[in-house]
Each structure stands twice: as C-alpha cells, then as structure tokens.
Length: 64
Image 1 (cartoon, rainbow, N blue to C red):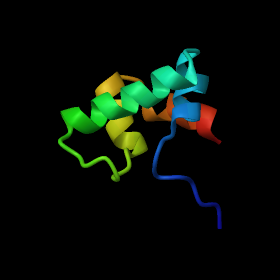
Image 2: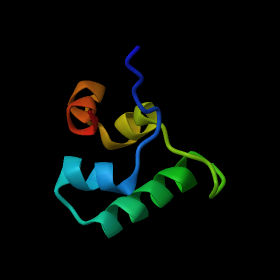
Image 3: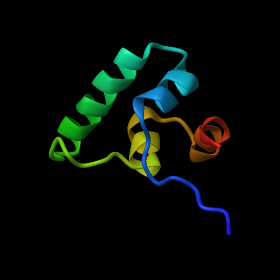
C-alpha cells in the first residue's frame, strides 16, 4: 500500500517555488494565520494548494 503525506513542510515549499526554506516557514505561518489555525497544527496539501493556487497534481510531483 502506497501512503502519501497529508501535510506539507517548508522544504517541500522550497522545492516547489524555488525560494528559500525560510520563505517556506513564513508562508506556512501566513497560511496558518489565514486559516485561523494554532501554531502546533499542520497545513495539508489541499490547504496549501487552495492558498497558493498551485494545482495538487503539480504539488504531488515535487513531494513524491
């Protein structure tokens, strides 16, 4: 059975956008604030896709 990750990390954002890992951390914090999440909660791939406008299929290419 092939399991895929449900959440996204700063390193993933770095690979997708070509920006720094620090930018990825800031973007995740911005998304958490936008979605009214607590600091310990994760951001899912779907939430990142919706916020960034990047299709889930493209994101999955970089995560897998």
